[in-house]
Amino acid sequence: MLKSTGAAVAATMLAGCSSGGDGDDGGDSESEETTAGDDGGDDSGSSGENTVAVSPDGDLNFKPEELTVSVGDTVTWDFQAPSHNVSAWPDMQDKISIPDGAEGFGTMEKGGEAFATVDEGTTFEHTFETAGEYTYVCTPHAASGMVGTIVVEE
Image (cartoon, rainbow, N blue to C red; front, side, top):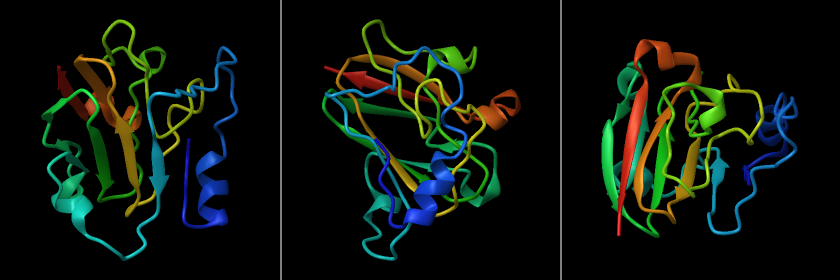
């Protein structure tokens, strides 16, 4: 599910998300995912305990590279530079892995455009319902090592 602060942002972010796939829209009734533009409000996303900075200082990385959370916790990715995304859809990239029985996630829909990126100032959230290790990537920069890990504990 994508949420945005403006129709123009939503239209831009959804463009290209209708390609191919297996017909599964990636909906997951057990997880809540949002993508929203920066509304200039609460800054807690940048200092939150379960927040991952995407491309801090323009570097091709996630900070922290590995984050440990508990089942039921929500992680927020804070996009600090343009031209990046988050993908944990195993069919999109070889470096991606998720636990058996877990739902994939990403800033794009399942089966959507793997290289669709989001704007600087955007945040993306995913709630983890299955324990295990999730390896995710920024698909445009995975070959450059832009790979992160979320460890979800019981």
